[in-house]
Length: 196
Image (cartoon, rainbow, N blue to C red; front, side, top):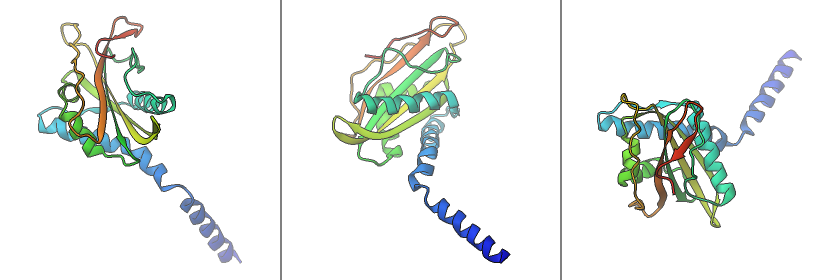
């Protein structure tokens, strides 16, 4: 009798485990794949890897979801992230369909000088990636947001933001020009210097 109960409990547990959607686990880790892909590029250029920042991951994830809910793609006047960073950057991209396309998205950013500048920026030390799937302009898309964080340089001045209206070279991945915010007060108020 005990053996039957133990077997029934094991089967029930396994059955419940199988009922969890396969995409749930994949989605929680895909941002780590993006971090590794970006860090591989930084290593090729002799730069230290980005450290994962939960606060930047959270802000990037929220923004990716918000863009799709609002049917909007682009930067706002401010990057909404932790005030612990005095320098913030943001890269955005979307691709048609439900595939993550981590490698393709990173390659496209690297082929765009202003996006490349943020990925290879020596003043950024932390990164968080966010991704969302949904509809944008009536199309099913996957939207990526990278938030970068850093401190002011040793002289206390901010770093100039790259400016460009250039689209990425890969036609299957779309992007907005990157944005950099610099903190203007200890309270964390920021103003965008490159956002549209």
